[in-house]
Length: 196
Image 1 (cartoon, helix red, strand yellow):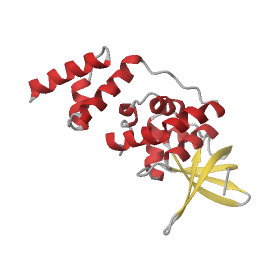
Image 2 (cartoon, one colour):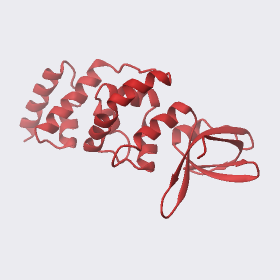
Image 3 (cartoon, helix red, strand yellow):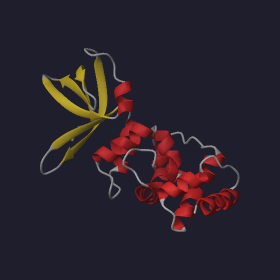
Image 4 (cartoon, helix red, strand yellow):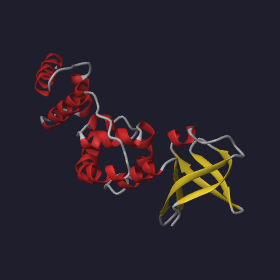
């Protein structure tokens, strides 16, 4: 319904920006990252918006760039990712970092967002990987290649989850380890046996 709203930034709260445009004050939910990029009160601001209609509320979510809005809309298309969880993920990582995490199967990076567990992060990667690879180029989202050891650690955590360990156990076991995926898994299993 609203592609973007351009107007005067009246004031902000912890999670909202109030923007006056055409004599109307819009309450727009924003992530901490978007909030940090807002101008001073009284200055002109432009926020790319997503309009959410529910039975009990109508809400606007605002983003500082078209890329951030694109990633948000992909996120909330995933089952289990609501508007607030989508904002939490974009609060934890930049759009290009998120795209990189999805394309490289880095589930661990996505679980750093508040309220996102390993299962939900894995579902996000599964559902969005193909779409992100195709559409990120069109929006000029530069995919930052994460360090190899970060990717390997993420894959090792996935392997440990598949073996029945909890996300907390898996993350703790691979913490601080480096090397190939196989080496990390081998050392992590030794760590888990010692603790067990």
